[in-house]
Amino acid sequence: MEKSYNDGEEFCIEVATIGMIHHVNVVRLLGFCVEG
Image 1 (cartoon, rainbow, N blue to C red):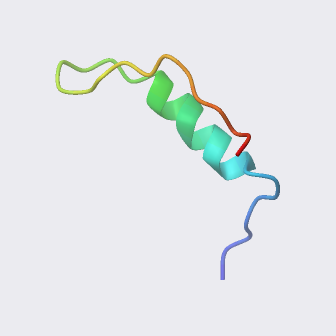
Image 2: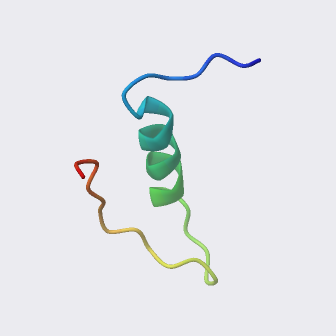
């Protein structure tokens, strides 16, 4: 089993990665909220 990140760290890493993608078929990510 892989080590999981605490407090949504893995989610934040994924969002940061998606935010850096520039492709004609991908909508640009402007922001997100981690609080429910």
